[in-house]
Length: 409
Image (tube, rainbow, N blue to C red):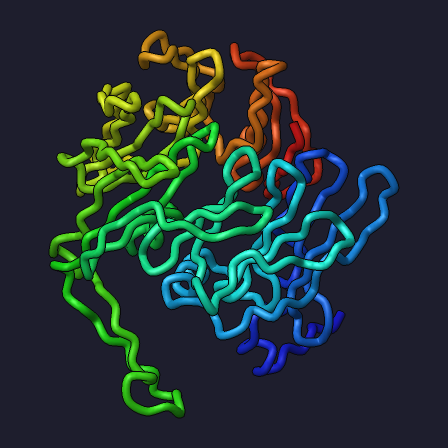
């Protein structure tokens, strides 16, 4: 058996050999299609494909876009921290109305139906759109441009600015460096469940020293060769972050998280209740806070503590009946727990000498959690289904290896 020859050129290019496989799988809201990105052509640019679940037919939906002048530095850095290094189409998402939104180089395009041509919604000649997100009803697109949050009807229209700081060195709607790089929080704003409000992070970097990165191989001269960033050096002060909530007319209230160093996670339960996870600087404490709107009244629901470190996760799910599912490592293994709305009457959904790696889906109608965990071996992660009350795990995947699943509920 002979080994495969890998050239220096192969090692230096992206993606590396053997790592160019389809990704970004998603089901359409009408459950007719599964969509994904995969490379095509010698340059490996990614294109958007769908499979019709009724016929099994694969279809190329979109392969190239003309984004124009290019994305902002904020969006370029955000993509790097998301490890979105491919060429071509690197991100897309479905709206509730089964439209597809495709950001490209600061512009935003919309596919109204499969088989139609993309429609330019946000032109980067006017706005360099960062982190576009659809409202839950699929009618409005929010994005960040120039450090402020803007909204525009997805059917088309005039963009409106709904946050205003107008102070150099501050932004609204952009996740700070530490949140993106160290906490896996890549967004700085969050739509409420009915699209009435948007919560947003305001970041103040005016006290943060700058750090210059010189691109030695750049043929340009002067400022074109240098990137200047606000960089919180070890042991120094971090960005100052506070959390606001605005309606779509720009009326803002501020939520009190002032005693915490980090805003780690934000999640809406209803249009009147938003949950916020906050940590101290040492990250030995994690508090789950509940804010009621429009009053802004705060309630501490629970606290996780460790002598060493509290790991962040994305295993918090508020349920429609007022309960919530929460992930915790309190036993030494990460497991799922069911809480009453006030953080009381905790019962274990999973237990044992293994850990829950992630949650794939919550099926509230049938009271099931679909999770990925190391039940069989710490060398593998399989998908299981378990009842909200706990009990026996039903194994979904069987092939050996690490599994991450997308489930259409």
